[in-house]
Length: 139
Image 1 (tube, rainbow, N blue to C red):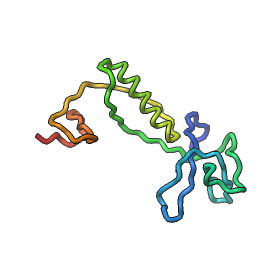
Image 2: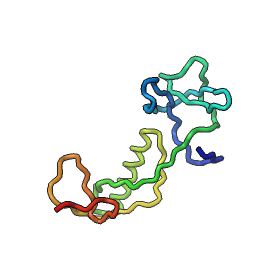
Image 3: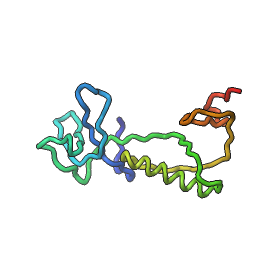
Image 4: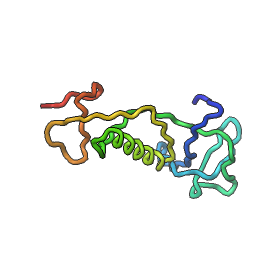
């Protein structure tokens, strides 16, 4: 993992505990505790449930693994007014990301009136017919 010094966008620190039998499932709750590690191992962070007696409160500075995801998110608009729909959608996504400790930084927000064909099962995503990354609609 690359090192970056002095970042300004720091997400919430999350618990790095995982059960022995579940190698890919981490706790992920917000962490308050810090476990020092002997070199060459990195320090680890834990929530109250997974802390050990020797763990200390997280210091005011330090290192943590920060992951940056770059993706397109499509949200159904709540208004036919583009500005209102865009502001509300950006806020809803910001709040959703915050629930897992993430910090979002919107680069751009756009909206369009889209159409779809035929009925769809409840919960199935509607494919944007103008999106070249999506498969063509079946007639």
